Image (cartoon, rainbow, N blue to C red; front, side, top):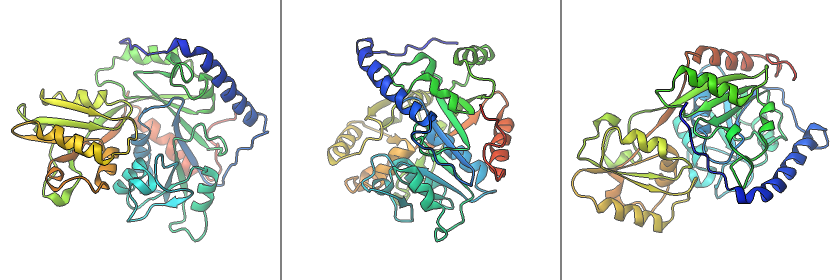
Length: 369
């Protein structure tokens, strides 16, 4: 397995110690029943992580949507990070990144038939989704990024960890990126090592499994990201989809990202063109007029054939921005990404999910720890 340098700010260890005491006490209060977790009568699947930053939660939520949407009436519930609204909001045809957040907006645009809602208080959000007057009669709920939101007791917890920054190599905030101690992994029934390279070797699977030190009741899977066709962010501008390999060596690409880890996407695009410039913003960055001017200036610096490529969640924010000019719209593409389960374990993973959701009584396929 290739070695990755995980940056730890050791001088912040004293602050991390204090943070860990607070996070640990909070978890103990839930374990002791002083703070209460609420269970519900329908299957609830939580997808989350132990760290801040991107581990690929949204592509994995979308994988579950594809798996379940033709069999069950499902809903996705998210916090709606950096939205401009408050409380519970059920996504509708007019919803955009400002009203529900970029990732929920992305999911709703790709899967218009499912229910997508946002609420910082997940218990309230679930209760609203299950109200008789809500359309659809929800049969199962996917919780996005709610592993630390312990007021809800999901029937199935899926914990993600980035291949390039395994939680066993990390430490607590602010010295590292862990939101809580590695011990928190005990609440998950499934752990997925995400963003694995395409050429990962069989010996790497064994080495990672040993380092993660999972419990007997936990199932371990590995996944990688696969990129799809370049999709126009503004289809009304007249441009059409194109394959990523259609990029010409002389074609200048401006990659615009507002995600935690753009390196994987950058590496993928460089396979097809050596003329690429990265314009990287912070995770979930809210593009302002100044940012749009910067993107426009950077784009017009290049001569000849050129285009802008961005992520799907950044596209959700750019599509709703009034400052994007008509000329720029003709050149902006989003690069979709999907998850692939490795080691020929896709059928096994799918079976676990489908069997769990198919049960009326949660936690029936996993014994109590």
